Image 1 (cartoon, rainbow, N blue to C red):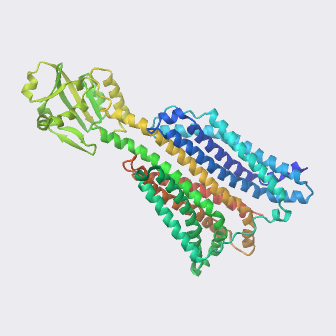
Image 2 (image 1 turned 90 degrees about the vertical axis):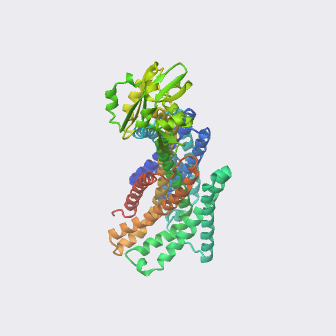
Image 3 (image 1 turned 60 degrees about the horizontal axis):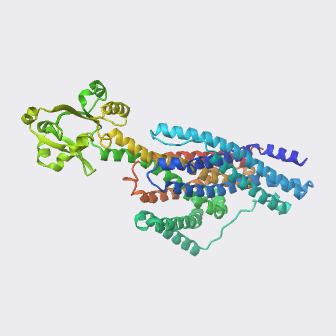
Length: 592
């Protein structure tokens, strides 16, 4: 009979259970996705230019585990908020405490195990899909990545199973010890906060000072090293907590003093809702702001590494394509590139010397990168007069030619030489990335002649490929981390809000009975949830803007193109907001 009542209650809350299942599946899927990367040492070492990346990802796995525990805490709170009234009714009907405890244990473990298994399978599928999309759309090369990992699957299942066993035990022992009246009336009394202005001012000041110290440490990370990271982490977490515990409450109190705002529509009710629960949300909002910064930072830095590939390629090379022994190349393929610059130089070489015609460089000066900052040109006269400038010609030659002495001579001397002659062709195109595949074909054709192929360090396509292999792994991991942390933080916030929804039903029901229009109630819900989403989002964004200073040593322009990751991130974050509003509205404004 008890099982039938439980199934009947579960059927009654079917929509809520679907939300819970989907959230837990997302959590376990994300956890698996991260573990499939962090447990793949060969992938990490093959796709990152830093030797400590494996340790960094293992620390990241620990951080994700901590976040997952917090996430499951709110998911479990949501489950108990749905069912504790039912458990109280079972007790009133005469159910024994040990039976209720067994029922709670079985329900919690069953929900957790099923959601974890399905979520892990979804995680394998998502890992495969997301990795393919990132690799194809971002034009990156990832070595050794396999979406299926038995080790990651086992770690995910054991981790979640252990957490749900612990949660089931705590739920069973806690619920059966509570009085029936307490279960029936749980969460109906909001937590009001009464703080003296002087303490709020002190908290605000201390919070701002803590954030300033953390931001300073991040901006001078090269000076403080590991100590700077530790201090920044402690001060930013502390500062975030104090900011939400003081400034947000202070702002709400100031707004409530304005009759013009307070008595417009249902603003007074909305502000009261926020004020009642703000202390309970303080820890969550500070945590969400930190995770928000980690997620947005990972996404921003990932895109930054993509920009770095193109910048370093441009700084390292001069011409888009260099063809040694160009007389052997099909010039129709060159014409298909629609080059903006197409210059051919005649080359003669002996056993120990290589000769160039000075007049040809006077007509078409040599293009070089001056100290990797800007491109300059040198005429034939300049190359002949300055040996250092003539050394830039080495970048156009093959490794075999690099052992020979360079000679810049006039036309008559060049024509009089009775040595083997070849053509050196240099090409610029309008857009290297657009023409990359055609350039690759010509590079491969040029390399077939092993005695005259250009050095890989000089050929732009080879340089681009090298940097792409170096940074694409970090770009890939940045996207993965950003999306994973975003889903986790938004889901934590969503479950925290939804777990309090059952207690809010009576308030919205009372407003409906006294004549409040449904549109005004929906507007109030949107405003309340918008504040809870927007507040940690804005602080997290500020964390990122200062935190990018840490990457000045890795990225030449850490703030370049920052609008793209910010826009992408806020679009996804806004979708979570809309979903939360929809679910919350469905609970508190359910049609009778």
